Length: 69
Image 1 (cartoon, rainbow, N blue to C red):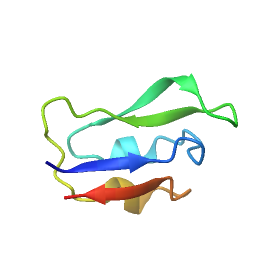
Image 2 (image 1 turned 135 degrees about the horizontal axis):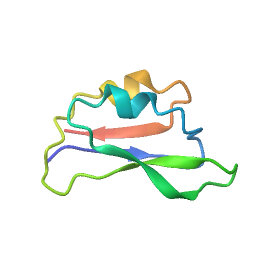
Image 3 (image 1 turned 30 degrees about the vertical axis):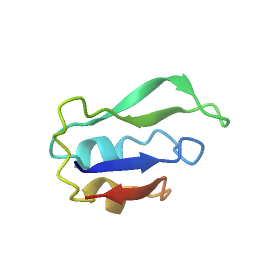
Image 4 (image 1 turned 90 degrees about the horizontal axis):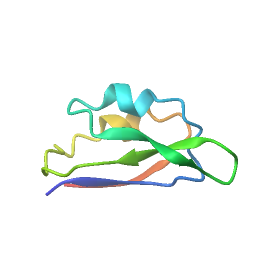
């Protein structure tokens, strides 16, 4: 099962990773991080993540710190 780890305090809610995910598994959190942004959250209830790392490659803040395949 593939998955990603997002550093919520580095995320600035640009939503680029959400657009990059082919399975739409990244959502905006209802909570805010230490800098006041609604950070990205990984939600994969059905184990659909491909481990393609497109989200991590597209993140301008390098907030997606790990991709497990």
